[in-house]
Image 1 (cartoon, rainbow, N blue to C red):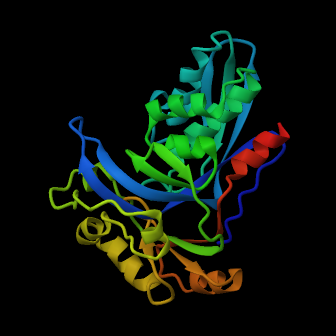
Image 2 (cartoon, rainbow, N blue to C red):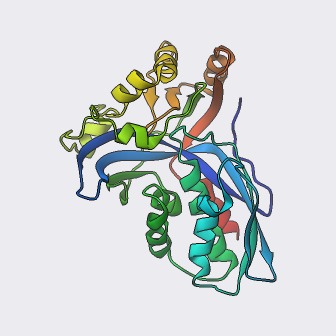
Length: 285
C-alpha cells in the first residue's frame, strides 16, 4: 500500500522511523544498553487528534484496545505534561497505522506528538530540549521524535546529533509477527561489545544491525522477510524488528515489489524524510 501521512486541519502526525543501523556497544549497570544508531523518519504514521476539555480529565477515546488506557504512552505523556497545566484536560483520538512490535517507533512517536501538540495547545511554551527531557522519561526513542530531524544517536539513544542521509523511496515490510524488544535485548547471545564507529564509517556503509542475528534465529518470519526483500534491494532490520526495509530507486519500483508480497505480510510504499512532518504541522499551529 502507498503510505503517505495525511492529516486534517485538527490532526497531528506521528511519523514512523527507521534505524539505518544499530550497534550495541555495552550495557550500563541499570540494564540499559549503550547504542550507536541513525534515525530517519518515514512519510507515513499514526494520526492524533486532541480535543480540549472544560475539566481536567485526560481520556483516550480511540487507540489500541490491546493497551490499557493508563499504560498508553499517549495518556502517560499527556498526564506528565498536565503537571505543568493542572487545570487543562483533553480527549485524545489515535488513528493507528504504524504496526506494533515492528521497530518503527509507533508508541514513542505518538508520545512525542502528544507532548509537542499539547505544549502548543495548552500554551506552555516549553522549548524542544525541555520536551525531549520529559520524553526521555517515557522512552529512549521519544526525544528524536520531539526534535523532529534525522539524527545520529548515542548513549541509550538520547544523545542526538543532526544528520542528513539520502532521502528516497523505501519498501517497508511487516511479516506476520511482532518482535518484543525485551526478548531481543535480553537474549544472552546478543552482541554487546561492538566497537564505536564514526560518521564516516556509517556513510561508507560499514554499519549493520547487531540485533539481526538474534531476530533471524528466534523469529523465522522476519528471517524470511529479510531474505525475500533482499532479492530486490539491500534489506535491513529496523530496531529490533519485526519490520524490514530497503531503499529503492522509485515509487514505481516500490509499488512493484509490494504487489508481489507473500500472503499474510503487510507492505508499505513510503519515502524517507530527514524532517518530521510533525515540525511542519507545528509551524502551522
